[in-house]
Length: 97
Length: 509
Image (cartoon, rainbow over the protein chains, first blue to last red):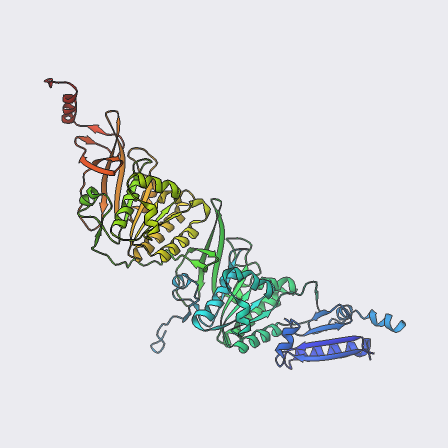
């Protein structure tokens, strides 16, 4: 069951990009395991996708589902803020239901 | 600077904004970023868009337009009143848009280090997609509330400027200021981004808005210094009036034209030079508008086209008064020889008047121009902007090689001088003074040619009369001194002659 549809925008294979990918993977695996989809987009390769989602900063994590759409910028090292931004308690409600 | 590298100025990119390239000695530094800062409503966005648009229209250079504050659709809608079809240019791939405005209601959470590489990648993508040479970043100040860390933004803007420089594009960055004076911007961006800074101001002077542009610095390149007035209107967008950049290189003509009063032509050794500016100065009721009518009559009779700007009287009044002196304005207008434009000075700022007058001159292509009266324009402005107005107008008229007649109303009935004349007198070629002369309890009128460049002229103060045929210049006043000072005195000889007229026979003294 996919509850979280996420898109991570990065710029090239920089240490900062790698850090964001690692942080995201770790959060997803521990907090919302089995309930997410992640798309990683390199804006250098796909600038049009960055244009469509109006991305200014990288890394930016876009939470497309559940609504509302939210942008979380930075390398995701502040775990608490990421969880708050993803609104993970939705998952708890869904599993209870 | 070694022998191998002679001092060379940075090359400039002409902006295509009327007047700007003159004060910028050719344009903004090519391949660099230039910061344009100004308060809200100072015309930053319009000027930036005009830079982009002129690139496409005049130089075949495509552009990218990055907006941080106003949504692209709104912006395009706003400038449609200038007749600018941005949508069309976007469709034809001559202009690309990067929308960096915040999504309404969207909040961003910062969870660690980030940079603005995505924005740079989008801008670069847009530049490549239309092969752009010009880029504008409109209202970068709007980035700061969107992203929380001001230091990151400053660092990243610096990087974006460097990235754009690598691509060889010329960039105009606009930013809002909170005050007309003081620091360039509110976010401390200028230290990072701008080797080149332009300031736009929109000051309130005498209850009128006066827009000016100032080039604060161009690193490694020259420019004119100080503030220059500009206007924004629906026909031409931004027009800068490059006052001190006006060159004094008018031709000069030896052809003479009639002033409309034969005696005055005689006093001026045969008439006025065709490309000269004549100032007629006098108190109310001395016949200035009459001189204008006669001057226009002379034009009509010579088959020349005349343009009359009336600032104080309506068309009906002018036409009626001219008819009383035997000049048919209505017929002349129908024949296309005359065009009367009545415009109160109060309706707009002097810069707009100037622009409008220039357009009228361009459209009607007259051989003669009359402005009745110049001093009316002084009412609505500061001495400085009035002076700029007069200089710019005079220069325009001279460039067109037409004859100009300005009238000026003096505040004092007899004698005296008003501030206006000190502004105008050095610029005009011919000055004719009309004065009341109080002689033995009578108000009589006297005129003199105060100066006339390049020709000898009659230095007498002559009496003149006005009747239903117009103005008639008579003999010089004799035995009267101090007419121009307003306090005439009479010599003894003259007094004896006068007394002789009173009592007969002449009593011996």
